[in-house]
Image (cartoon, rainbow, N blue to C red; front, side, top):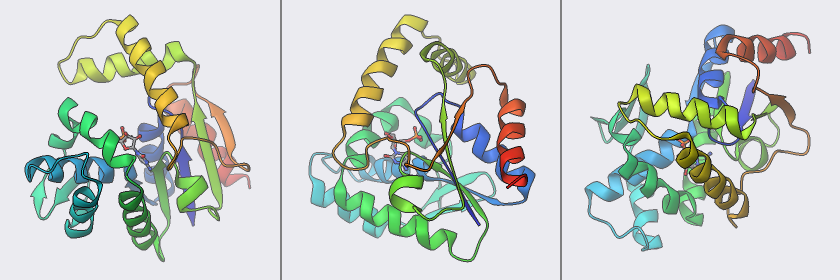
Length: 214
Ligand code: C5P
């Protein structure tokens, strides 16, 4: 069975997907980590991110693997490294690269074959797994999303003012929705869940309730 969880940054997708997978005994697929892994490898190799075919070649040649909670690129453990602000910025042009999206989407489908998977990203219910049994689209108010991201940054030792996070978030939402390839939008048959008033436990309760009562 495939369960997809899409939505904007700060809606609580990662935590929800990880927790839902654990609760159901499913595997968890973090597709954002795959775009980040390609960005990391491109930076390592000194590739110009504007060179679309060179970046596509990186995505074709790297081996991205997941083991327990860790991410590896060609056997190198990059779990923390792919969360740096440099890699976050570099993952944007990588995610806008059509060839990279095709290659990673194919890899995501391959990784899910014959398995029970909760997969998380932006395009999972729309482009990658349009036939998934459950497609969730998580949203939250601007304020709730910004506060969560502020806490995430703080957990990584970065103190940022809420106003700046709110502004970056609005810019990013606009870019994500306007992107010509893989834009962030809910599938027509997505189940929308607003997580503003829910904590992590509340979100996984809601999602698992929907899955179990179907
Ligand atoms: O979710 P995360 O922040 O790790 O995603 C990293 C980058 O990859 C972001 O720029 C996001 O828009 C992009 N992404 C994507 N499609 C996905 C998952 C992430 O374009 N399925």
